[in-house]
Length: 110
Image (cartoon, rainbow, N blue to C red; front, side, top):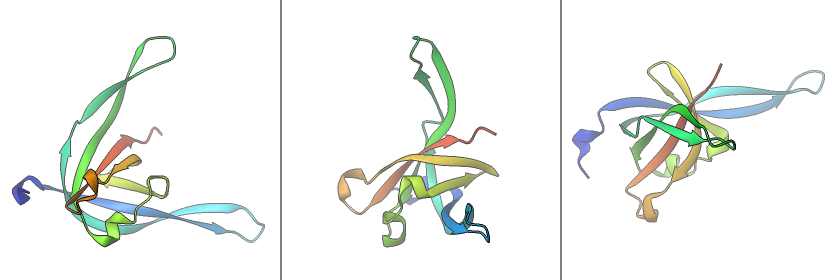
């Protein structure tokens, strides 16, 4: 593994769901893991049901494996990169060799 390729810093945040005074569920995000990453596949396209292509803003972030990051679940985490928020749509454990994780990230549409 070429460590020099891990040249950007990302922040992984986890979601906590709490209940307020009247029983509503409220999602709050807190910083969970700050690490260096390699960013690749910085854009993509998705084919819609009618056959048109839609451009998506996203990337793949490869991070070094650690026990803390290996326990992530895609629906409970998000990535902050360059002050932009990205959801994690998938986590690839790279054949479970405990060397790296690949996070497929898509930009949050506001």
